[in-house]
Structure formats: structure tokens, C-alpha cells
Image (cartoon, rainbow, N blue to C red; front, side, top):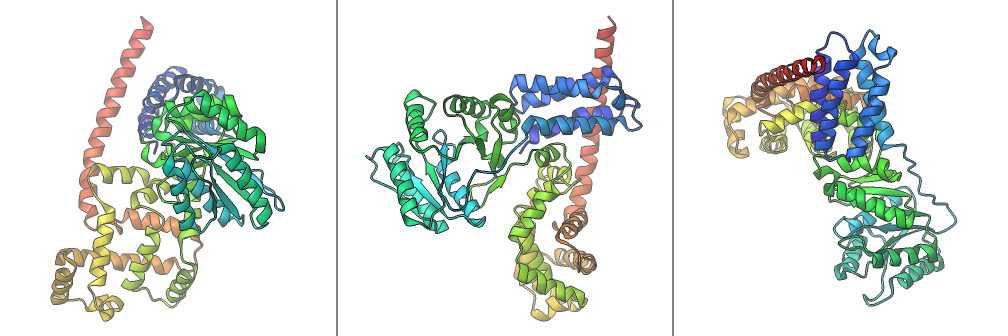
Length: 491
């Protein structure tokens, strides 16, 4: 996500990094490039314009221009303004123990509303709430069945009535049943959608809103629709007074303009973001963390939270005990990789680690596939005997040939893996007793060594050489454009 904006900002800020001193002139030249990158990232025009004006006012002050490190000061200004643009966000949903809370979900067809209802129910259940899903989307016949399937997958009850029922009555009956049961404390209403905003849809939603007075009215928007998502959010808010927005499919949107525009245009905060189709791919939206990702500074806090949720505590404790005794085998190495894979794809993980986002992009540009390489590593280790996994030093040439044949690889890859394992073994032994956060930082060291990607070293160096040439060309081009602009200004 945000690749377009991130790369544009990288180019603009890279121009300033090469300046011996920041001036009002070169700051404004850089901001012109920033505005261009925001517009290319599908940020609303007025939002991009106002953002650059705020940065300019803050950046041309005496504190930045006369600072010993003016570039860092400027980046700090951009970071703070990005946070202000997307926030603040109150993640609370107004739910109270001892009563039945009501969350009304609305949105256009195709936005992922029904799936998001299930995702939100799963999040609330993990926090100790007891949700009930109400199938009130009677415009789309498959919506009722879809919600029932999701409910079965999550073991969360679903209230539904025949498709020819009145949607307002369905919502009222669902809430009434939740109150009668006594074991439900939050009801999530999956209301109807349309292909576009129309008065009939709004009238139906207003009736549900008036009759039940929900604690939260949340709009589900498809981030990939860009400005259409912002426009629909404004239309819904004007009619319903939304409490928050959930942006779906943000993982598939390289531009990310909707995330930067929604709060500014509508005044409604983004509370959650959908980052995948699976029912566990709903995250709280943190403007500060998102600003950090956009500027290529990583997001260790989100990675830490993912690790806490995904890592098997008992397995990790057992591995730590082995490490304390100085033991770390290839079996442990494979188990660690399987734990890491639970966090998501390697490229996604790398983008959350400070300084590794650019490496992930370079690997993508070089058509390198770390996921496929992880599969090869698992196949190689799986083709070894227990004795070989415990004592890799006994793996001689004949054993390497046998393992290569069994795993569909070649002996050279076995040899490279064994060398990398020896390095990783030392790192993992040093990680014994470290906190989760320190372990994640150690992953940065492992990734930079190429431990997750056999054969990456040669390709990485080649790609780095190509990338450095591209960077030089970009800087040269920016300097020429700046020179032309200065001549134009003098005239």
C-alpha cells in the first residue's frame, strides 16, 4: 500500500537531502514534487494543496532553516502533517458491559461490507465481547447466505429472516432477540448496499438509524476506488452522521489516496483497515504508524502486535529453553520460519522493519520470490534425516546430493543453506532471553544477510548496482529541473 506516494516522497525528499542548505526556494521546489506525488497517489486535489501549504508554513520557519540538521527537521514536519491529515482517531466503539450495543454497518455493494461485518465480529469476540450478526442486506440475495457461512466459520451466531422481509423490522427483531437471549452484548447490523448512492438506500438506512439509535454507524469503503470512496463517504456522512470509516482492500491499493483524503474531506476518522481477504485481516488504523510506513520508516509496533497474536507461546518457550542450553538445530530453524510466515508474506514483514522497505521493493523489481525460496528451504530440511538436522556438520558431498535430489534443488543450494544456518545459529543463540521486540529487530539483521532468500546475495548486489544508477539519474534530472526553475524565477 502507498507505493506510489512513498516513491514520490522518496524522490522529493531525496532532492533536499543532497542540498548543503535548505532555503525557502528549494523547499518549495521539493514541495511541488511532493504535491505531484500525492496527486498521482489519488489524493484529493484540495487535500494535497492544503497539505503542502501547511508543510511550507512550518518548514520555512527559522527553526528548520537554521537547524544543524535541516533535512531531518523537514522530514519531521512532513511526518507530523501526515499524522494530522489522517488523524486523530478514537478507536472506541461506545460499547458497555451489561447492555446490548448496536453497530450499524453500511456501504455500497462490492465494498466488502458483509465480510467486514464478520471480521469486526471476530475482533470484538477476541476482546471479550459476545457478538450477534444480523443479516439485513436483503437487496443482494447471496448476502444472507454469505453472512451465515462467515458466522459458521467464526462460530458466531447469525440472525436472519426470509429475503422478502422488511429490513428495518429484521434489524429490530435481531436486536430484540439479542436482548432476550441474555448472552449477547453487541449486535452488528449488515445493512443493504447499492451500486451507487441513491435516495432509496439512504431512506432505508435513516429508518434503521432512527428506530434503533445505534452506538456506532460505520461506513465500509473500498480503498481501490480512490476518490469514489471519498465521495461516497461524504454522501453517507451528510445523510447519516457516521462515527467512523473502515477502508477495505488497502493491501491491494498501491496509491492509498483514499486513506489520506477521507478524514480531511469528511471529518470522519478511519477506525479500521482491511488488509486481506481472510477473516483475521482487519487492523486498527493508526495515523502515526501509517505516516511512518509512507516515509519508509517501517512500523515495528504493528509487527510486534502481529507477533504477539501469531506466535505459539508454548513453542517459543520450548525453543528459548533449548537456546539457553546452547542448542539450535535445523528443525528449530524451520519451526522459526514457520512462525515468521504466520505474520504474512516476507515482503510485507520487511516493509514493517525500519530500513528494509526499500530492500523489499528492490527484490520485487528483480523478480525475486522469497516465499518460493522459503518453500525450498523447508523442502531441503524436510529431505534430511533427524541426525542430519541435529548435526548438520555431518552432511558431506554424498549427503548433499541425496538431499538435493529429494528436495528438487541442487547441492550448491544445500551448501549455501548450511552456511547461512551457521550464521543464523549464532544469531538465534544470542536472541535467547530477548524480548519479542528485540527478536524482531534481530530479524532485520537476518534479512539483510539474505537468510530468508537463498541466492539473494548475488541478485541483491546486482539489483543494488542497477538501482544506484537509477538514483543517480533521478538526482541529476531533479538538479536540472531545479536549475531551470531558478532561471525561470530570475526572469
